[in-house]
Length: 522
Image (tube, rainbow, N blue to C red):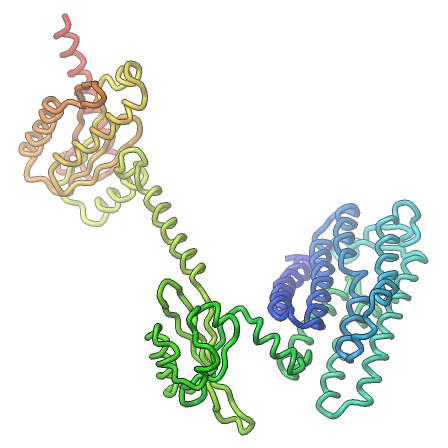
């Protein structure tokens, strides 16, 4: 595999990481700093996505197209960085409309200069291809407008770093860790592009997208390890109330302590605050399975999740202990996630899968097996346990074309269904019946008493067709089948040979039947 394909594959894997980070930001969008974080990830997404496919491109036009995709995100990273640091350092008061409008000058300039380069060639003076690495890379001769773009990018970066240094100097020890993490993460965001822009390290590829990935993952680690995007108690309360899943907290003795709005909406008759302090058995008397799960958690040491149906709704109920300052359990938290739609979707997929499986094996019109499935099963039976007392039979309907011509194809279809049902009801068991196509049917009999008795039984079925006419909508039609039979004992176990033997004998039977009808007409 080529070097560029490996790098592109790595970046595409990183794109999936971005999706996880974006989902995290979306799930925690109640806090402004998380929104900023998400927008920063989104800008990195466009940069990484575009560069992944730029590496796979072979012409300048293709590469420029993917560079344009990258510039959907590149200009906005600096302004998002400044907004995020203002929020992180507690300087949200500066995020006025005027400030944001001033900060937007940089991204607007970059977008304008980049996307109008074909007119002035001041952002990129020229473009060329470099094949020295074994695959094409674009060489961009940067113009003055590009370096002006670099100046504004790192001006914004210095603003953010200045805010972080100021916060670091006045913070306590715990807060200093968070600030240091923010500064280290910013080195990945802006350090890699800076190294690439000035050519400090002679690397043929653009290392900036890799820096963005490291930065996003580093920030995510900081969020979970050091509570990097720390929320105030008021924000925590708002987040708790806005969680879409139902959250119910009991004390260690299973008495209700608190629940969120989603729990009220979810259960409808969940008690009001006057009943806080009542036992789980009283609070959730309508849901015995949930009560049993809550009471059983006293025996559980670790996190656990259980799926259950509460009336018409399905939930994943996640349980975890709430620990106090001494790290000992002081309560139990239950998060109920509604999975009803997922269950219905899975059931729908299962039903569709069964339908597809049925259609793959059956003839839609008659409900019999189709030719492909019939041949597969019969060949398997002949190969695994060939029986000398087995037989194969093919039949088709005489004068079926005339039925279609005189009464129409709908009646012809109904005649085929009538014929299939008649065979199915009257043939000796065990048997496998299929429709070959058109007016042809095929049957396999795993065990017959004897050749003579079998032929006698088949002739009896012929008589059934003669006595029982197709009758519908005032139409009466006599079904006249032609039949060809091959016997394993006489004709061997090779399916193709048996089939052709049946086919030949059926056409002999067909000729005899038609000759007889012509003779009767004369």
